[in-house]
Image (cartoon, rainbow, N blue to C red; front, side, top):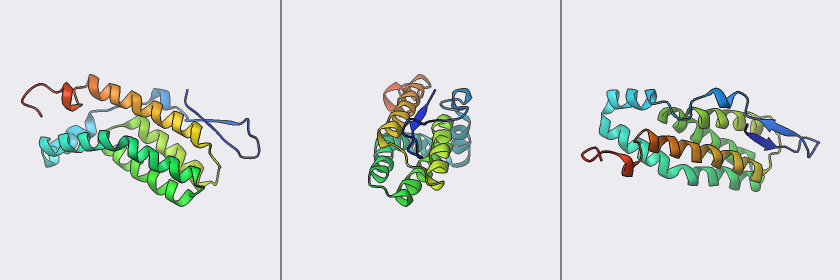
Length: 144
């Protein structure tokens, strides 16, 4: 179960990402739709860029939280949420929705706890992308 530690008056409170365990880590549907609409090469380039940019996007969120800049944190979370939806990264998208909601409600979130949740989701996503053959090194020859 994913958790964030919060400081809403009680340092021991824990927040969960509700129902995330039941959501697929990576759904191929959105990428298949993208490939049908704009071509497989574009869809492949999109998922490559998306996966490569995940650490930087997560770092931007964490820097904003550490710097107590909720506006920047919300902007970074919304960006990751939108691209995650386009990539079919449904669990990470759900994680971002929860994080965005907490930021907008003014909850103070522990960057270390958020880091743990974000990077756990990123690791699951990269593992699943590899399993589905979406990582460049895992694609059959002639598809990269």
